Every structure is written in structure tokens, then in C-alpha cells.
Amino acid sequence: MRILAVDPGQKRIGLAISDETGTIANPLTIIQHVKREIDAAHVAAIAAENGAGLIVIGQALDADGRPNFEGRRSARFAKTLRAQTDLRVVLWDESYSTQYARQARIQMGVSRKKRAGHLDDLAATVILQSYLDAHSS
Image (tube, rainbow, N blue to C red; front, side, top):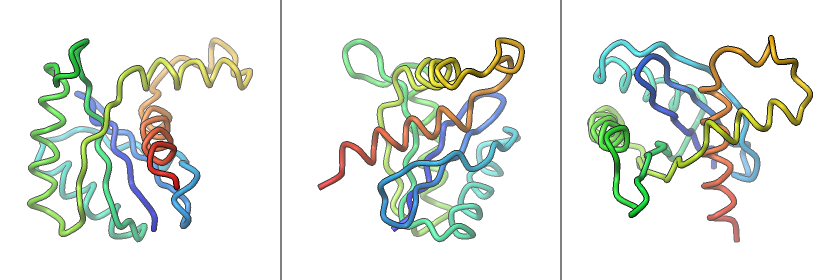
């Protein structure tokens, strides 16, 4: 089963998709944030186009494990998305996903100049790989 991951942001939404076996996460695309309902419909359509059976949404948590401001935004997005699709939608801790994505770019040898810019799809990939690793049997 393919799994779609979402890294919701204020300006952009990063998406990643797993392989058919649910083992490896890959960056998929980035969509521009418009409005929660429109974004949710767009994500639901992308999930359907890619044959996803589950949607994982990154949720930022504070030091006590509770959703922070951005995490509460993710929860509202998840609620809106659930109204747009029959697929199961789950929230997953996204702590440090952007930092890990930035570090991965450095380790891949991407130049400082080319590292500037968005990391949304890579952050979604980090979130998804974390979810896949935690749920592998």
C-alpha cells in the first residue's frame, strides 16, 4: 500500500509518497498554500491519483509531546482533509523534519547556493520515512 505524507506549512505544502511495499519514502511535489479547504481537496486528489491508501500528516509537538501552534494547525488540516476523502488520515510527529532534510542535503553534497530555498517535499519525505520505519514489521 502506498502512503502519502504531508508537511503542511504556511506558504507551501510538501508531499512525499512511499513505494508499493510501504518501505521507502520519496519526495513527490510541493503545492502552494491557498486555503485549508482548497489545500485539502488538492491533497485528496493527489492521494487518489497516486493510489495512496493512507495519508500521514506531520504535526509539530512541544517538549511535553503536546501539539504546539503549528501542530494545532496540522490537526485542523487533518480534520478538513478527512471530510474530503475516505482514506484514513493520521497525524505523525514531525519534530526536526526540516532540520533533518537540511542535513540530508548537506550530506548529499549539495552546494550552499543550491541548498537555499524550500525543503518542504524533503521534510515530508523525512516524516514519511519516520512513519514507515516505526510501522515496519
